[in-house]
Length: 275
Ligand code: KIV
Image 1 (tube, rainbow, N blue to C red):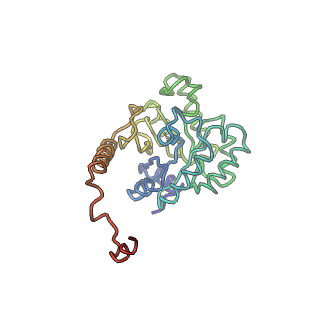
Image 2 (image 1 turned 30 degrees about the horizontal axis):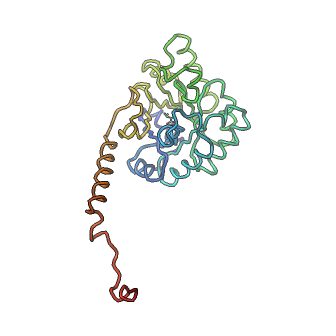
Image 3 (image 1 turned 60 degrees about the vertical axis):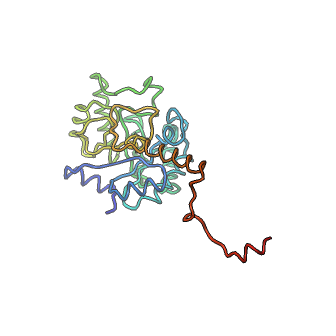
């Protein structure tokens, strides 16, 4: 069944958990979609896991559109949520609406996601008023990594916890249909989840959130540059890929691949005409 923002709303009402995974290409999106995951996030984490940057700052609108369109072609039932990259919405409400529109029109997104609380509520309101669903993102928001001074758990002090709670209420009030909570203490995420009518999607925010999201390369053991504490490895695909690549290398070099069964044939009389 097709997942939409209404699926998110109903899941919150009925207490049903929501699953979300990132994807950045057609074949992975198709596998995740066929597995029944509710939503695919085309995260700007593609800067890290696909493009090899050390953060998400350099990711462009063109990068997001290119990968979103590929994912959208592979996702039949999952709701495709696409990240608005750094400086595509912070600069003005006008930029935010235009760029959210591009992600929908050119990237075929089903919704967009942007980082921040009260300071981006005007943008959220304007994008929602343009008919585009918005997922908010609070806590450790990677586009603000330079302001945070590193990848640090958020909401640990009384002031920070109060700010997170009021940001969560503000983005809900501005019209967000869901909010991602990243690297937030579990008890605080639980409290925010109870206070909101829209679903919270946790990543490093404990199991009382309404749903969970992970970067697929992290949960498959395919990205080992850095593994956050909150990641569970559901498979070790990285090792399987590495040994398959090594086996391929060996077989090409010792001549055991390709075999007869991999060859195409041609009539001998065609060949004889060539000599
Ligand atoms: O870009 C991303 O993958 C994200 C998730 C970590 C939530 O924003």
